[in-house]
Length: 421
Image (cartoon, rainbow, N blue to C red; front, side):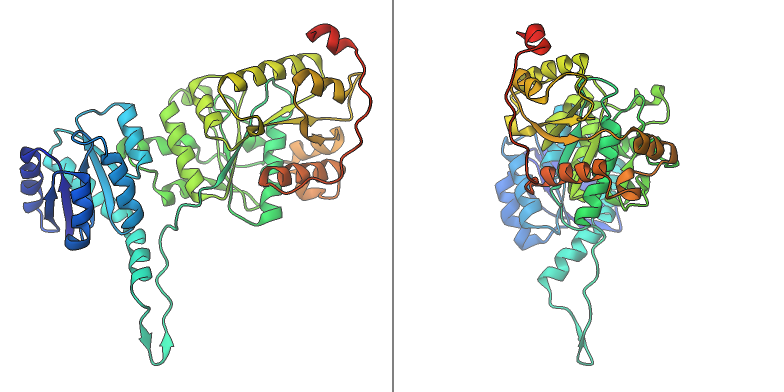
């Protein structure tokens, strides 16, 4: 039997839920409460599988949901509200709710939600039961505990690559950095192509786009709760390096189906399931990309020593400052660092008022070969200077110190000072 604890200050709602559950052979009402705090006290006594928690009656109910999911990992939360707006859905999701119902809900809608969440969290209940109960012993040999379908949230780090100008090599750097992170750490690494209109990650990695982020949309539309980890894994495409890739839509018109809310929910799921999440984007400040920038632990900005790229990078830094990003969140990376064209690195750093966190040398032959073959150069030529630079960038992102740095050279005024003042 699926035991449900309803938390709602309205007696009519409590009676409606009780009647709907009473008509089912596999579900029952475990009890009722009017406040989140009362519900927390009852959970230890009533042992429900699911808490149906209203967001309308008490401003602390979102906090109660977080407490329930943390203190009672075997209990799932379904949140209800008279308001079905995006802000409410987001609050419920961030509080750990597995499903969301808009009141008044039909009995069938309630039962379908209860059963769906119960099935979805079978692995979590099994893991919680394993932690609480000793493993059975047979013939003197301890049996291994059952494996959970989904493990605990990893709280992974998100590294978003955002170029202020097209052609700065953002996609190539993002793909190779993701592979470098996997090779260097052997942890779970995801690569999300959020260049929704014209994403090229699949081409760079020579992946068959049999599934993309668009395939996640029906599941997200039907279930406002967190993404099912198994379903997300099925949509992501494994690369030979071990990196899991979530591809951009296969055509620009399909990209319009992906909303800012969809992107936000994907980011939450990826952070929960992976140790490192590398995201490639395209130059825009629309809401979907702003969500990606906001969620990032580090925003990696590749640029080159060319006047248009430098100008746009300066504008981008002004925007990130206006967004109140901390200075250490944004990392400037100088791509094709040895192709200077008369512009000195020190002059650029002085104009940007920011030092480059990493430099990547130019290797046109190897990069072109890598792109044409669809194999990252950090895999085929790990000892090449450009690959070593990528590995240093990966080390910087995860917090390891860089190698020896060059001594600072004397600065001089020049074209940049004339242009920017």
